[in-house]
Image (cartoon, rainbow, N blue to C red):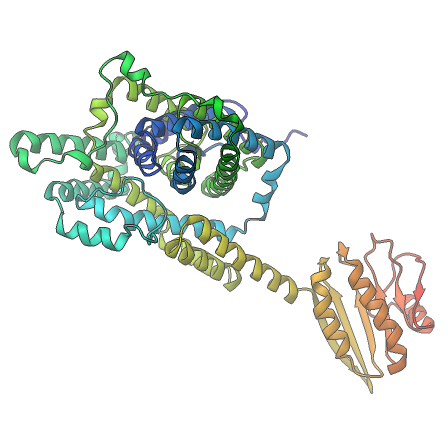
Length: 554
């Protein structure tokens, strides 16, 4: 029987219109973020653009993720800046980036991607909601015309840095009327585009709101520049892409790695740090993208590590900073209608073509327009319906979800996810402990009969609760332990039952334990007479097959 592939192996044109929208809108958002991340990392501005192009085209081709888009990511700023400073040379850093790519490929062949299977879904959803809230809050300064933080790092409160509270305070004293006008009109367009009565028009259905927002922002600012020049947005209020004067100047924007540094130990320590952070970010991002995927496809994690490694090798060779899968760009693309990896290829192609041919036009885009796009993206990641859905699943899901959000808001992305993971694992272990077995007690004349039904998977973690239960068994009781429905019973649990059976005779406790029908473990009993009674009468337990038995205590 044929099985449906969970990831695309070739380019799919079945959703061409949606993929064009997704690729083009994510491209518009990516341009200033690539520049801002490169600036914050202490790298040449064009290095961020190179990483964006490689992430869209090279990783887009090599990856089997349907919706993830790769490029420079704010989570890599710290490790990139530290590596450049420690190596003292950007070309030496590029060599470290190439080696990091090789390490990632090695991790892929070593099947290190399996760790993504252990990310609790509540933590992944909490990560997305936390990123959404940060996107909303960090766009507020841009909406009023204060554009100092172009990197859009995922940290509201940066130790020793310029945090969001200070940015908001500065924004209120330096706001721009034109930026506010562009932001309000942009948000109004997003609202109208979602209304059913407007969706009936072909223009609204076929033209993404984000594209209209960008065009409108350019037109308004150019109109103000013509009529009221002092009020127009300039400088860091607009996208600032390097504009080479000629072909020679364009090729000078590329930097080659310094291969003479291959014997420098710091190159390898930097490479390991880049590889580990970029790999973890990639695994988290593809889990998040798969969570957002309307078709719920699953990305092969090990192959993704190899694709990311290839991307970092190419980026390093061309003079780009490290890249990874980027949640923000991926979610913007998905929200715009992308459904296949064609959106990532369109994203990379537009970056390449427009950077070469239309840099002056891109530099007219106001940050206020892009901030409106990111704010709406943040709202969709953290809308109230998501909180209600997770809350309905119970406290074991909701508490890790909320803890992850708060930890991300108060620290940074990776630290917040780490705290969320610890919380999620705690609740998984707690639920496992609580659901180890079910107990029913009956009073048969003067004899207490205790029925214990073991769960499906009885690991060593179940031992403590079972020991506690067996210690509480009163004298002169009958204990019936049914493990026939269990797919696995740990040997420590079996030993615990055997030890209890040995000591039970001293307290006149009769024990019968029936293991799983698929197990080689024979039943355990303290009384041959009792065991034969169960076989003969089928009281609480009834053996469905002839088995070898192991008496205990004599």
